[in-house]
Image (cartoon, rainbow, N blue to C red; front, side, top):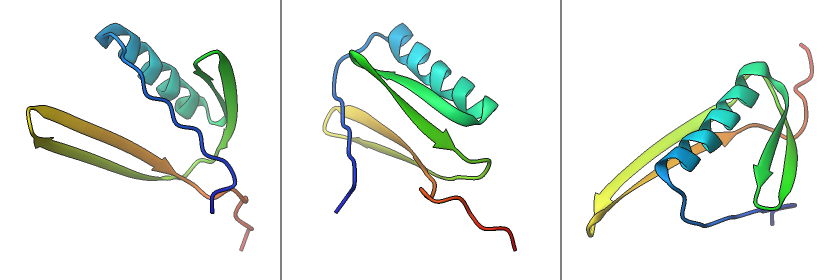
Length: 80
């Protein structure tokens, strides 16, 4: 079971999608906490220096689907 799940589905213009991805990229570039605007509210996430990524592209049935997944642990890694 997940402690928290937020999912948002909506239509965006290409420019709006680019703005959203640029804001995420800027937050990742600076590290620490990323504050993301999600609809009417904002979500703040601690982003570590290292994370796992997965990019998936599916083509079929008249559309292309691209998923970009970023994963990292909720607890900070302990120094060895």
